[in-house]
Image (cartoon, rainbow, N blue to C red; front, side, top):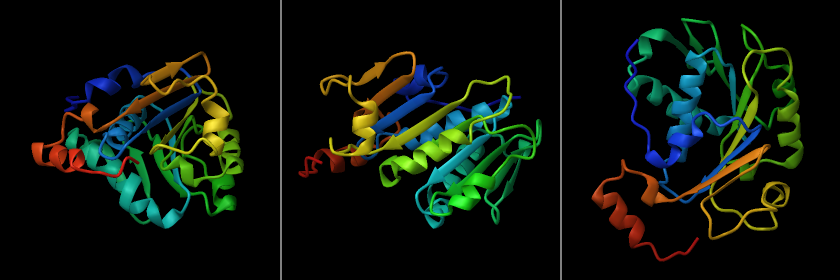
Amino acid sequence: MNINIKVNPAYLPYLNKPQFVQIFFGGSSSGKSYVIAQKIVLDNLDGVNWLCCRNVAKTIRNSTFNEITKAISKMGLMQYYSINKTDMAITCKLNNKQILFVGLDDPEKVKSITPVNGVLERVFIEEATETTYDAYKQLTKRLRGKTEHSKHIILAFNPILKTHWIYSEFFSMWEDDKSHYEDEKISILKTTYKDNIFLTEDDRKLLEDETDPY
């Protein structure tokens, strides 16, 4: 199998981190969503079931679902995948493992969702700052059952206020002048548009002309 893949160098060490909680945060155009999509596809080819979430179900199709479908196409892997746009379920034909999608505004669906082969091993929460702490805890409970793969949950978001539950829960050891932190339970990576090698010069100029510090 030939896989066409090019990853932003800043993210390469984070494709196979072992920590249960993995956080990717940073400004617009930092490339975090696409590299996470690449990671999810690579994991799925290796036999991992993923659940991808956003706070509101109707926002998933035009964000996470499309991003992962685009990654599959750019990596030259479309022939190995069945993509169900109606149910928003992506299944690898090689191992029958799945990438599933759900909105956190439907708690009962979150509780009942299950892959066709094996158990859920990993969860991705896009725009995690939109979700509640209770929703996050519910998702951690979905990662249960025997598997040969490590289990973890990825949170991706833009910069947050220090009053947000994510900051109080995960950033007690964080230093603002650093770009990464990790211990045995958590890894955190902060990126900006400067870490995205795929931006054009026009893209960069627009971002550098931005006056809003946020």
